[in-house]
View 1: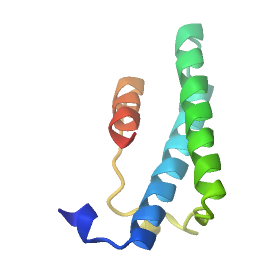
View 2: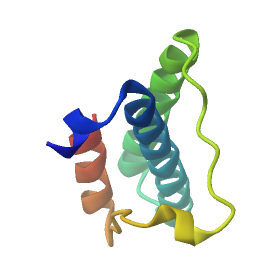
View 3: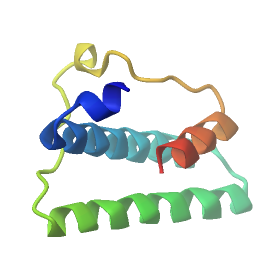
View 4: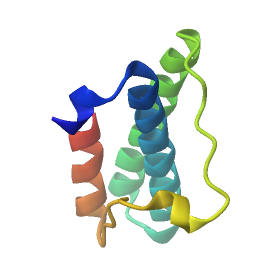
Amino acid sequence: DVWEKKNALEQAQEVQSGLWLLQQAFGVLRTSVTNTALHSHIDNSIRNLLSINAVLRSLNIQEYTPPANAAGLEGTWRVSSATDLLQVHVNFL
């Protein structure tokens, strides 16, 4: 498995980049929906991601610094719906 071949630092960086990408995606999604129930789910998801970030910080794991350009995001999944994003979020967790 590719994940298991990575060292702890590489795994931590990948987790941090995933958290950052999910936060960005949920932020964009939140501004584009008007459904109150969906807003609540999005807010809960964002809070959960922030909590995970806080735990990682408490473990002295360096925060993710996003790339200056999109080329640094190669291999990133793209989603076309809120359902797809929520599924990626669940799979990530």
